[in-house]
Length: 140
Image (cartoon, rainbow, N blue to C red; front, side):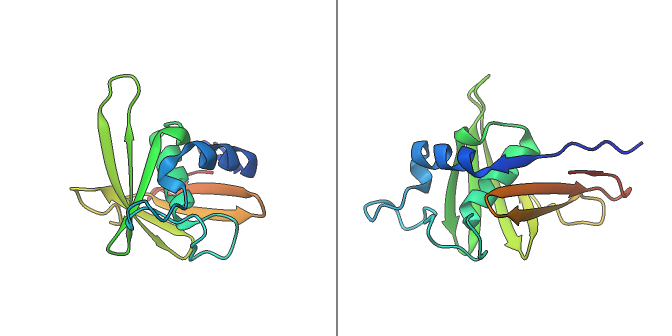
C-alpha cells in the first residue's frame, strides 16, 4: 500500500526562517562559502540554499530553523545539531534541474538504483518535495 505524506512549505515559513538563520543572510562580511539568498540557479523565489535546507529538513524530519547552509566547490552543504542529543550531522547536496542528489558529507551519494529519488517543485510561494522509491512507492 502506498503511503502519501504531503510536504508543503509555505513562503511565510521561509520568510521567518530567513530572518533567524544567519547562514542565509546576505552580508558582505560573511565567508564567501555561505549561500547568498539572492543568487539562484532556479528562477523562482527559492535559492538553491533554501531548497537544500528544506530538502534535508524534510528527509531527516528535523525543523528547518536548525539547518545551516554553505556552498563550496559548486556543492551545497547542510548541517544541523539534533536538539535531543546535540549530535551534529553533515550532508552534501547537488541540485540538478528539479532533482535533489544528496549524501552524508563523508559518505556516498544517494544516487544508486536502490536509493530514493527526491524531486522538488516550486509553485509561486510554495516548495513541495516528492520522494520516489525503487519499488515505485512515493511520499509527496
